[in-house]
Amino acid sequence: MNLQLKAVLLIAMLAGYEANRIKAQVGKAKLINRMTDFSQKSMQDFAAETEFGERACDVDVIVEAAGDQKLDVRLQKAAIKAGVEVGRKTKNGCDVIYSLLCQDNLTTLQKEVAPCEEQTSDCEDCSADWVRRTVRHGVVYPSGFWKAEQDHFSFWKAWRSTHQHKGQSLFKFSDDFNSEYAEGALVDSRTVHFTPTGDTCADARAKIASKQATLEEALVGLENVEDKGSFKARIAMMKPFQKAKMGYDKMGCENTPIMEESFLNEMVGKLRATFVSVRQPDVNEETAQKRFHDTLAFIKGHSTDISLKDAIEASGIALGKDVTTEKEQEDVDGSEDVDAEHEDRLEDALTEQSTALVQLQEGQVAVGGSKWGFVEDAVNGVLWLPLMVVIICLFTFFWHVAIWLFMVAVIISAGILAWAMIVKILK
Image 1 (cartoon, rainbow, N blue to C red):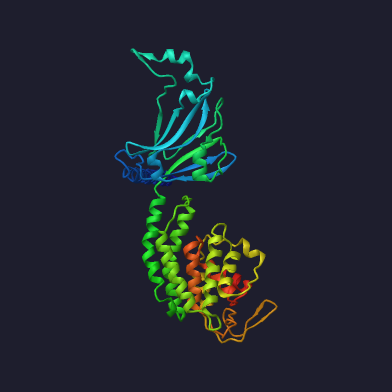
Image 2 (image 1 turned 90 degrees about the vertical axis):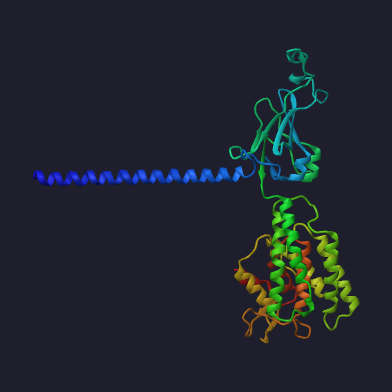
């Protein structure tokens, strides 16, 4: 190989090496810039809380039992401002109290040794020898004195934890905290985490309140709901309110009323009046009144652990029908929304005024010309859309479940579609 060719190859190698080196440096610079931007943004987010980025007293705190039992309990900001003893654990023979409180407008986890009269003889901090050793500069600290340790929350300390170490007891939740905020479900735990969150129950309740006006508007003139368009418009007005309620329920807020009793009673009164006025032609007023009362009582009596089976039974009571349910319907989870397309298909199934020839044989749907296997209601061949809207409204007021499950329940109870066809629509 001649000297000139060697020189060209050497130059090419050096150029390639230099190009790779520059590329690597550029990559590192981009990574550092991204990390810096993220850090600055995070610091700005937290700094917005207080001057030093520490969490102010406008947050809820999630108390998580993380030992053998996994359970989250939400403590709302109003309770924290008043101060709450969460529990205790033993260190060096002494009971140490863990409390959440607001101090100097900062959310604070305080740990302090309980008074000596509440301690056993094993508590080192209450021994006579310890008391003698606390004499400093002519000041005698009282028996059991121990400066409370106060931890705040910030960007660098997004949560606080306590773990069981050697010589320490399990964390025992206070009876008052356990009964008021966890319905007695908490057990002694090896590890407990304390995590503040800006998504507060108070804000969620305010969001629900802001949706009440729209919901009230949806209830005006229900008896005039006669077609698919007006039906969908009313359901659309209910959805923001129902989604806000579901969000509130998922947050684990304690069972505080999310609607004023007067507002709720007024809305139920309007629904009752509409229910009676749009009753089927063969149903008298007294029977309609009783059906509404029985439906409302059933819904109120099944406000927890709601299944599709419950919703179907409630709809059947309202429509005056004996509805048989299938076992798999008990396990249907209505806590999540379906996508818009599937929800739209359910609304179409509920509102379609089909003239297709459909026969029900042994509980199976035989489809004539209808797109969804739709069958008209057994009485007078009419679907009472206002009546169905009233039923869905009742569910919306008292149950924290997605509206699509309510529509499925009404569809099945009205005899419009069999369960097998509903499953096809949802897939």
